[in-house]
Length: 267
Image (cartoon, rainbow, N blue to C red; front, side):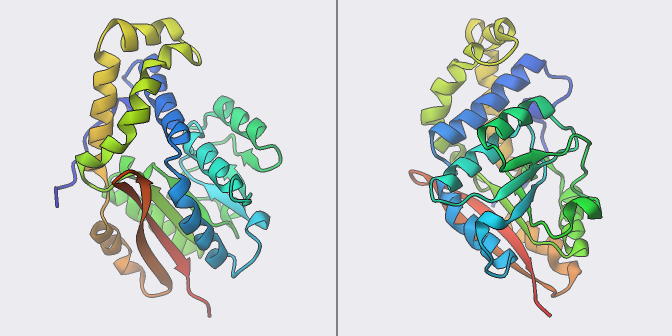
């Protein structure tokens, strides 16, 4: 197993140009959607919701999305779920809220998505917000160093809430290859989308910098991944009041992503 490396990514570096960050983030969200790369997550996520709600109707559940970013992964997952007739409600939150982007997700899923405009720390979710709501973190955990991940998991356990985490690959740079067939043409279209189009054209058309930064971010993401062994070591001090489960889901072709979930044990 390759060692975990906490390297930087352009898409979450505050010093990187905004147009470059936006282009990379938008491309990732569209790649997930166009490549249907979260379809394989529908079954394990639905199973998690059933377990978290003791068998209640998934469509009646309210789920707290932590680290929502621009809302891309949440939108793609909700779309995949809707294709299977499952429509849980989702509350978008982040330490750095992107309210403008969230409004677009809310418009795409009226009555199903809401958001919190104030910053929400995934390591210290307010009781009024998190009580009775399972937590989900999609394609975000690798950005956090181990000590922060431990605190995220600890906060869920301390609150007695179920938690579901998914990542798009394991700690293997080859896993990023599954994104290439859809990701490359989507990346080339970055200057045609959203704001700062002229700046995006500079990074993604006039120079190779945008492509190089995107490849760097993808490869670094794989090297930041927390493995099953890492995650089990993090939750070991919390005692035996939770059932922890690790699994893989198909991502496309030969590649796969993983999920990690914790369900409180009954009395």
